[in-house]
Length: 117
Image (tube, rainbow, N blue to C red; front, side, top):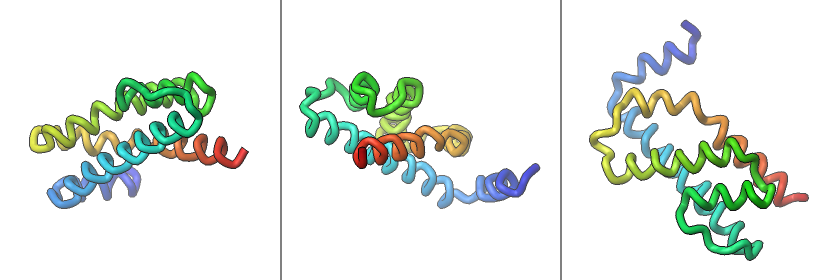
C-alpha cells in the first residue's frame, strides 16, 4: 500500500477529516458551476437550464472537453446529495471521490487556457 493510501486509510477514521473532504467537494464543485455560468453569460451563449447543463454548454462551445464536462455534470449531482442529504452520504463514496480530482484540475486548466488565449 503506498503512503497516500495509508494516510487516507488512517484519516478515514477521523470524522472531522471526512466532513472536511465532503465540504471541500461541495465548494469546489460550486466554484466550477459558478465559473461555467459566468462564462456562459459573458460569452452570451445563453443561460443553462441547470447547473449540470452549464458544463455541456461549455463543451459545445469548445471551452472544455466533452468527457470531463459530462463527469463534472454528474459531480453536480454528487454536490446536491452532499448539500441536501449530507448525513446519509456514504463515507466510502466521499473518500473514493478523492481519486476523481483530475476532472476538477482539468476544468481549471482548460478554463485558464481559454481565458488567456
